[in-house]
Each structure stands twice: as structure tokens, then as C-alpha cells.
Image 1 (cartoon, rainbow, N blue to C red):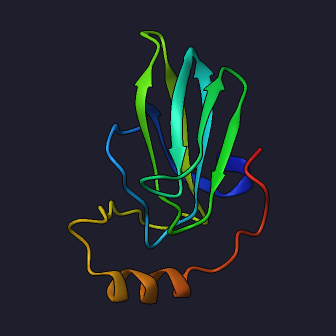
Image 2 (tube, rainbow, N blue to C red; image 1 turned 90 degrees about the horizontal axis):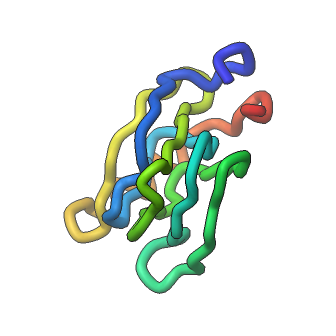
Image 3 (tube, helix red, strand yellow; image 1 turned 180 degrees about the vertical axis):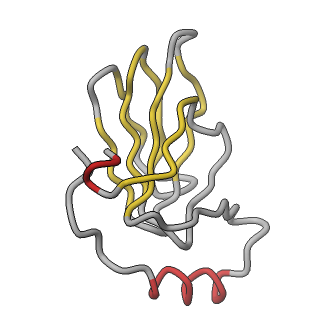
Length: 112
């Protein structure tokens, strides 16, 4: 991912609460295990992800993982070295977040 300018890489799990990033596009690569993931915020579609799956989340797309297998691990990264933030719908001013999301440039390359 780094060679394609997706940086800030980390390994871990997807938070179990709804959140989004207002200042960066995020990629999540499932390294092991499986998880249920909700996309788009509360009431959004729920899908099962497993090792080998890649989620490419444009800035502003809500996501959370209410459950996962004990061996679940993802690697994450952010396009163009952008700084990431964590916005929670119940805590973040929507107009502020929308203005920041509108400023995020498109990614130059796919992450994988």
C-alpha cells in the first residue's frame, strides 16, 4: 500500500461503533479471520468480510464491525498521506464534517 501512496498503515480491528473519517479515504485489507461490517452508518447494509477482502471507503462513509472472529485482523491505510480523524455521528457537527469531506481530493492510485 505504501508504494501506492496509501500511508499511515496500521493493523488491528475495525471499531465496534459507527464512525467515519472526514479528512481521508481509507482502505481496509482483511488479513485474517472474518467479521460482520456495517457500511453507511446505522441501518446501512451489513456484510461479512474475510481474509483477502479489501474495503475502499471514501471519506465520509460510515462503518463499524459489531462482531468478528477471534483471529480477525485488518491492515488500514489512508490515501496520499492524509491525516485521519474519527467522527462519530452523535458527536460530530454534520455541516463541519461535510465541509471537510468536500475538500478531500480523489486518490491518485488504487491501494492494492
